Amino acid sequence: RAKSSRVAHMWRTRDPRTATRYHVRAKGTNNRGRVAAAWFDAFSAVYRGSKVPASSVSNYDHVKKRLHCRPLSYFLYRFRRVYVGGGIMATQAFRIRDKESGLCLTKAGKGEVCDAKEHGRSHVFQLGNVDKSTGKCCSGIRAYQSNDCWDLFDRSGIHWYSCDISGSNGNQQYAWTPDGWIVKGLDGECLFLRDKKLAKKDCGDLKDGEGVWEKANVIEPTEYRIYREEVARHRYEALLPDLPDN
Image 1 (spheres, one colour):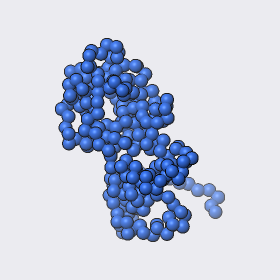
Image 2 (cartoon, one colour):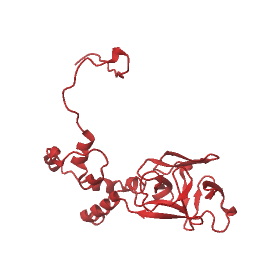
Image 3 (tube, helix red, strand yellow):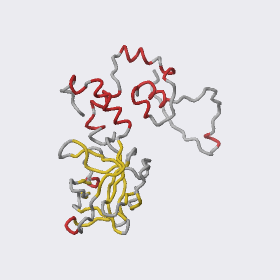
Image 4 (tube, helix red, strand yellow):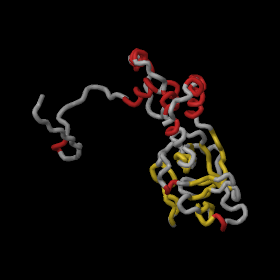
């Protein structure tokens, strides 16, 4: 064993001193794709990266059998308070529509005509972050298939920031009430559209019909459908009633 060692990391730049002095003949390996093919089982269909055939990772099968590995659905169910309760895996994806005008919100906080076919990442939302008062979902608004949540709301409008799935970030508290109001937690103010732009004011100052929101073009994401089906197929709730959720 060496008495001492040094580890350095060098960034390759245009400086000739950092140029490679060798040639790699081996082909690149799609490590993420191999992990997905080996371990995602039923969820492989929703892996969005470059895929590899399952046959290329068949050598994992005996390892999983020897170690009695459970399917990915078990892991998600075991930590369901994080993955489902925290909104990492959306149970619904939807547009946010102002009932009075019929306009839907964009990610930039503007109102536009709703497109029934629009389910890309840009203007579709989901609920996110644990509601600390219930320990379940949700206390905020999250961009669908992203890690961004509504955060600070100032004069320039809504700001996005990485989701705090624990529900501890007060800036990300946006409560969607049964009456359709979306109430900003720290301010206690309601969101509404003013000149087709998202604004906020005291909920008591809202006019009749103003600031009432609804979900539009609602879908159940494929990954959540797979999760439900896998939980039912493996009977986790019945067979593991005392399994912790976080």
